[in-house]
Image (cartoon, rainbow, N blue to C red):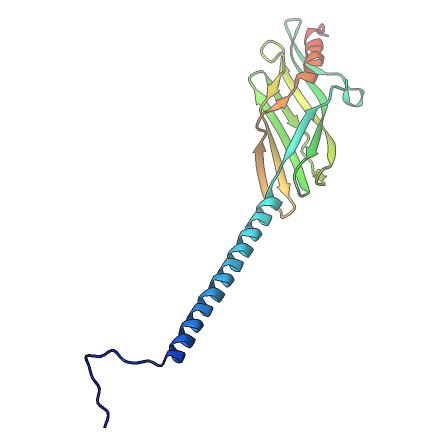
Length: 188
């Protein structure tokens, strides 16, 4: 018959206790390594997906005179030119990491509006394209052109559509002199 003394703690053989502690410690280390690997993979995947959706575009006004030789269209009131519409070129630079489709551009402030020709323009990463834009200017309130807030309608390769506004706006100064000349022209 075995007698159990309840006042004494149970005696566990030391070799068995060490094996159990070693097994528990190993499981914890393996779990930590697997958890860190999964977290890193998830984080890296999210960063890559965010980078692929990132859009960075620069827009520049070209100072070239008339597109296709067309002068400005104008509206004359009381013998004076009230508004002019010039068709000018813009250069679009895709500074982002993935190809994008620039569908449209628009800019406006009191007295001035810029409207891009609505069409598909796939632009590779690091590439540039040129596009036509109609620039409408109220001859009394719209000059000089200066900086304009611009909005781009853009589609990424994964077919996500978005509208983006340029942080510092768009510099329409290269078109200002041409608009001023058209505004000071005599009516028909």
